[in-house]
Length: 186
Image (cartoon, one colour):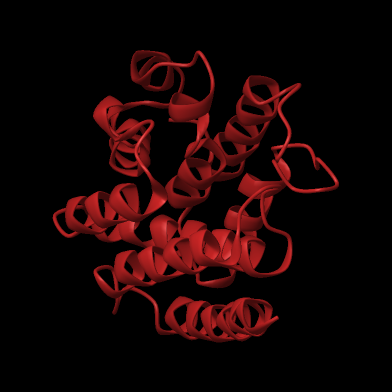
């Protein structure tokens, strides 16, 4: 494998190309790559390894682009592919309501490695911030609450991997919950 810095830079370039032309569903329609950037920052803050940081860059490419796990394996090797696979929803998850999909993700993550769990907590933290403060256009408060609660169940099934990430998630969860509940009262 290339140097740690090299593998992270390669993953960043690969993900940026793969997500090129994709945008978040928020009002500003931010470039999609801003989501993996947030996940990477959280993995780095929690002391993640180079492999975990690379997987954070790549965590959505199989679900959201034409990239396959075989493509990841050829470019990044087995260890990173295993992490990306653990972070990728199986095809039958697609199209289901967030409440159901999040429950399935929570069940699935229990058996995954500590590395997958670290990246998953970072992903759910980034998503929880977004769902609270910059949600996808068209999500009503109940859908946002369901999503947030689903994210929390996933994180609870990953807990103990990083006290720092657990604290960041809980703070983000509480802030987003406060915003969503206030909107529900309107």
